[in-house]
Image 1 (tube, helix red, strand yellow):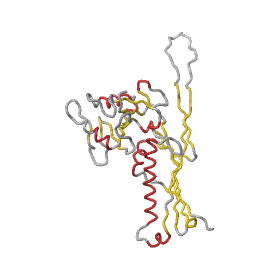
Image 2 (tube, helix red, strand yellow; image 1 turned 45 degrees about the vertical axis):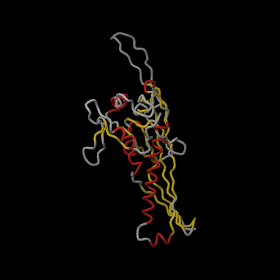
Image 3 (cartoon, rainbow, N blue to C red; image 1 turned 90 degrees about the vertical axis):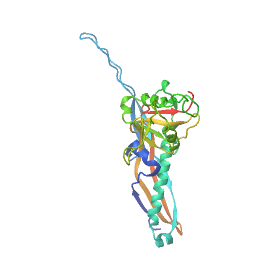
Image 4 (tube, rainbow, N blue to C red; image 1 turned 135 degrees about the horizontal axis):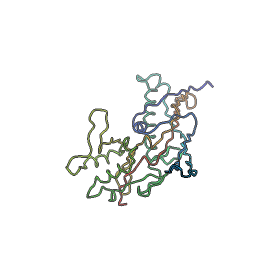
Length: 286
């Protein structure tokens, strides 16, 4: 049997997945797992007088986060006659369709993937009330009403979410929500009757909410009782995408004659790398 033709190509960051590749930190890897150390506690220090004793201080404690790459695949087919006779480039069209499907699958996984054979989305991590936040969890701020904003001071929860972030993360933060949630938020006004949501100043820029960019992500949940429908954070600091470079396309005209199979695979992973950098808004009483 003749050799099956194979090639690698970059994947365009389009459709649903583009926003996450733009917001998060992306690391290119050559292996199957990225291991990232982090400090569970920092160095200790203290003030002393000129002649006081200097006892040994505590050391930083390190732990490790692992981000395995998972495999996406698609295997569309076309007859050789269609490939030969079509007025358009069928192979290029198939590749474009696969790119779009991959981007949509990635976008969903980065939000809600359970980490089993797919990246772990940030909404899949345990969420706790921000007042009781601890490392390994994401903090949330409740709206004060089940499945809705509070009837009085509806926008206060957004202010609380903004200032739940430390200043170092806040300056690079984005709001993330789907279009239905954005439609609700767009109607909120401040005490002077001005809309808090502002359209983009120029084409290609993001709309802003309270001065922070709004990223529209269709994979975020709709507003409902208990839903984490809005996220706010510095996703570049908070979420890591691990990319095994390139898309592998295996063109197989032999296994399913008269069809030509385009077996396409990509390896990508993801997960939260900094639990301080992302906060959630929960549509619940508490």
